[in-house]
Amino acid sequence: MAFQDWCNTKAAYRFLSNPKVSEQVILSGHFEATRSRFAASGGPVLILQDTTEFSYKQEKAARADRFDT
Image (cartoon, rainbow, N blue to C red; front, side, top):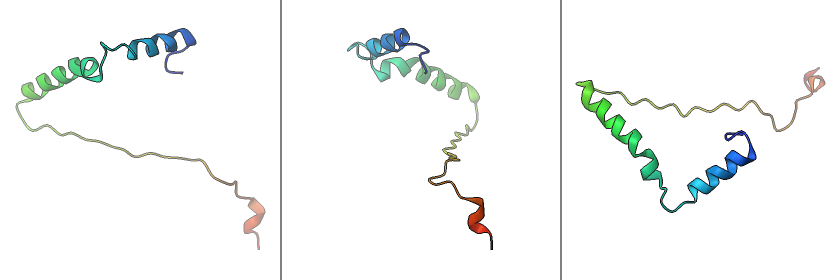
């Protein structure tokens, strides 16, 4: 779904399987921009992370009459 169709998916796999492509190379621009923003801040920097996940799935659906007295 992220690549919208099979052609884009195939292109992404081809790109990522290229030995000249690495995670470090892909993310290097992001890392450099982050370093620049930290340096320009001139003060403390808060790094917040929220790993909360919600799941509304139930293993078994509860029957309404189960709780009747």
